[in-house]
Length: 178
Length: 183
Image (cartoon, rainbow over all chains, first blue to last red; front, side, top):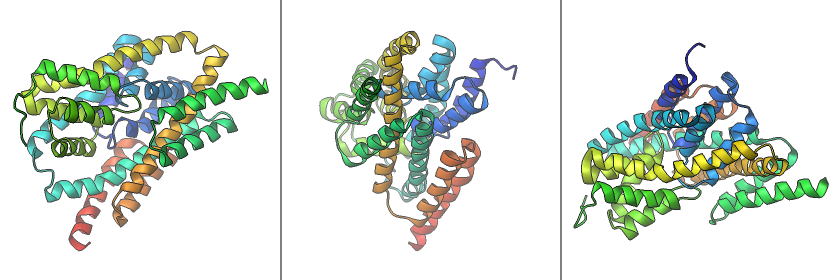
């Protein structure tokens, strides 16, 4: 493990970039696997906090990868992680976009979508489970996870309301039971 | 694919995506549609849905993929670069600010609790969103089987992503092909 940390980040994120069917959130369990479990660069709680911050901030979900880079190695870590996560997939999108422009109704694109969409959903669900266990400290956390999931599933309002409510509840309950 | 009367230049693409990045609280999809289709009229509804759909099939961040393809369509590589950097510029600045605040104040008890609540809820958002997407999928046996295998491998067994995707994705596409012929 003599490899410099930034180089490791780049190598791993570049691979994740072209495997993340379902977007950046689909890659989160893999990132958790090597950042927390394998390399011990941060603990579950910090990982879950950074994820929450990235979700609450404006912009695409891929911002989570940028904040991991920042946390590991400041500005150079952020730049390295952001480029590694976005450049390989962008090159792929660029090439494929030129090839299939205007062919999206074609039979094989439909087949690709039918085959890949369930995998994307499965990876996003796995992300939910991995993040739930990373964020879990007390029974109350489990309840907040469940309530937020129900809110998103059944309501069309902005999911950030669930995030805000959870923050208020978590702080409030701690003060009431103190 | 119809081009608008005056296609956007790289600078206009950059500014348009800058706005999308700033508006996109809790995901960018809604703000992207608003700016690209309704406000700037770069694409009509059908073309936008097509680009976004393609961005979703491809690996990587969906909105970044869509930004690459839209930028390329109007101004080639400079357009793609302008669109992606516009999309990410402001969120990255805001995120750095938040990360600095986090490192400074995370140790305060109330801040730690607030983050704890936000983290628990964020996990729930991910779950709820995935379940909602799953409900909208076309029912298919192959999709169900290989989706469950992928979920178990990554979510429960914590297997590496690369071998999982290399095995499950081709099989799932093959199953979809088979179902399309015998469905």
